[in-house]
Length: 503
Ligand code: C2O
Ligand code: CU
Ligand code: CU
Image (tube, rainbow, N blue to C red):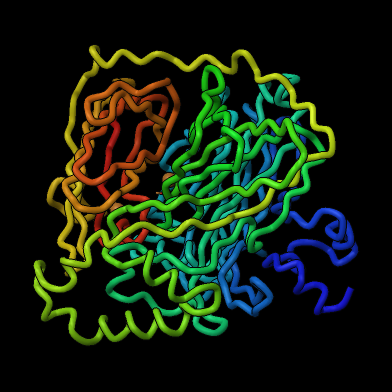
């Protein structure tokens, strides 16, 4: 296979993630799977090494200078419930970074967003995978102020926890795929510097990829697919729908539901994961689409994206926004031109990938039940707290309860072992995905309406002016942890708070 053929596959990091000898397999099945991290496994202990580095890769046939964990997506860490993981992380970037284990219920002293790993240094992350946590998680950097540029540049990978339920015939018989959704913006082979608009909205890009491939084809061998989905984008929302097929949601951020939930479409906000079953009952080609979604960003994604097509955005957008950054922004008041651009439409419909069903598909029955999801008792909550999301848009400053993040300040003190009810209130004109570290929670209600099913979550989207109530059991680990908006630009610009749980 020559370089040209290689490029044809379009998957970024293919050449670096896979040995060349393994490439021909993709001639039959070009759907790029994230590489699995090699581990040493003995006596319930899993040892592995992850390195962050600058990477020159190929994305959509073009060179791309990125920062990755060795290709994009980073290698998938696959572990089992109950295992102890010794993850040695090395930073070969020219800037400080670290590793956050997004969604895992492990001590905050291990998964510490304030602990940095300096260039050339290493840090050992040692933790035990809780029982009952089987599901889809991920890892990414968490350096306050630099999360947006580092995540956008490709520092993200999946962490899959396997458990006893995966042996269920209706799951085991399904064809499993990992789908990392991410958009990109390039200027030549580089990711351009962040503009004021990017800090305000969270940066989106015009190049949409699944496992770093542009509109790949997934030729299903089996009639039942189990898709593990991650939104690894900084700010883009994916309103997912598969042509002619409902999605059967079986797991959310923190693992399995009690039974599959049939959905015509699924909204995946930044940071969120979901697992769905797809039942292909007729041969054919079906597109997995991202339907239009208006998250209230101040850009004009519809118009701009439409105008720019597949090639464009890099130059035009980059420079346009750059001018705003250095030029006129200061002069435009809240009610000026920028204000009137508020929420100027949704993203346009995009095809993410095409599923080709097998010739005479016979899908498996749906699992009748999955895992019990504990019923929390909000009436017995030890505390009810209110978290109000706010912004000073023109300054690109973001707040929780009127304050920007300060690592030296504890915003919430809580008692280990207690259950709390948190009322999350979005007072802004934009969606914000609220994320809590260390302690998985359940959504109780949205806009006063009870949640339709019980599920473990670590990230929940708040539409503008929406109120979402969540139940948060503060179990097992005391320590200092954080909650924040997972539009990571907002996190970098202040929308984060500190929670201290005391014994
Ligand atoms: Cu995925 Cu604190 O973040
Ligand atoms: Cu997290
Ligand atoms: Cu936000």
